[in-house]
Amino acid sequence: MAESAGKNAAALLRAAGISMNDSLQVVLLDAVGTLIRPDPDVGDVYSSAGRRYGSRHDRAAIRARFAQAMARHQTPERTSEPHERRRWRRIVAEVFDDVPAAGEALFKELWAHFAAPRHWRLYDDVAPAWSRLRERNLRIGIASNFDQRLAAICAAFRPLAAADRLYISSQIGYPKPHPGFYRHVQSELGVAADQILLVGDDPVNDVRAARQAGWQALWLRRETPADRPGTIQRLTDLADRLESMPGK
Image 1 (tube, rainbow, N blue to C red):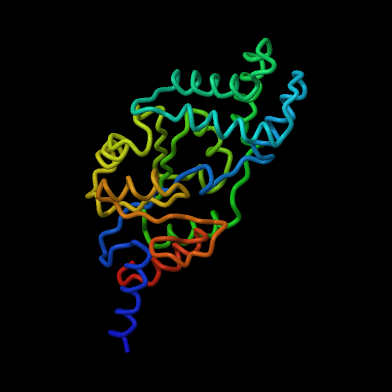
Image 2 (image 1 turned 180 degrees about the vertical axis):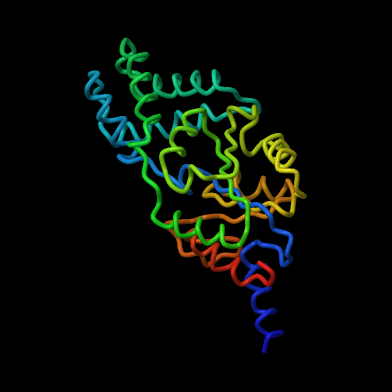
C-alpha cells in the first residue's frame, strides 16, 4: 500500500512539473498576478485619471492602448530603476496621446498610485499556502519584474513581509526571462538549480525560462482549470502537491 501511494505521489508531482526527489529547498513566487493584484484594476485607474486630465479616450480604448503600449515597451535585456521610470513614462504618454501637455503630471500621479500598498490586494489563497509551505521547512521568496516600489508594497502585507528573499528585476539589472536574472538569483541563494521552484502566471517568464535555467517551475492559471501538466489554479494546490512528496 505504501509503495503504491508513493508511486501515485511521484506521478502527481511529475505531472505538476516538480521533480520527484527530496532536494527542493526554495520556492520563489512571482508578484503581480500570483501574489497581488491592483485594486481598482489598471483599466479603471487609468481611465479615471485620464478623464481628470481631459482625455477623450473611453475605458475600452484605454485598456487596448495600454496593452499595445506595454507590448511596444517591453523591458529589454538590461534594466534599472531609471530605465523603469522612463519606460512607464513612455507607456503613459502613448496611452494618453490626446493630452500631451498633461503627460508628466499624469505619469507622476499613476506612478504614485501604484506605489501605494492600499491600491493592491492579496489573493485569498496566498496566506494559507504560505503557511503550509513554511511547515515544509522551505525558504520562500518573491521574484518579480517590478521596480523598487514592490518592496514597500510587500512590506505592507502579511505574509509577504516575511519573505526570505525579494528579487526585483530593476535592482538585479536583468528582467525575466533573461538568463541573467535566474543566474543572479541562484548564485545569491547558493543552491543547485533543481532545488529551486518558481511559481507564476507568465508561461514564458515564470515557466519556460525558469526551466531553461534548470529550475523547477509551475504555471499558475487562476482563471483556467489546472488540467494541463505543470499547471495549478491556486497556490494551495502547490501546497497539496508538495505534501504528497515523501520527505517534504
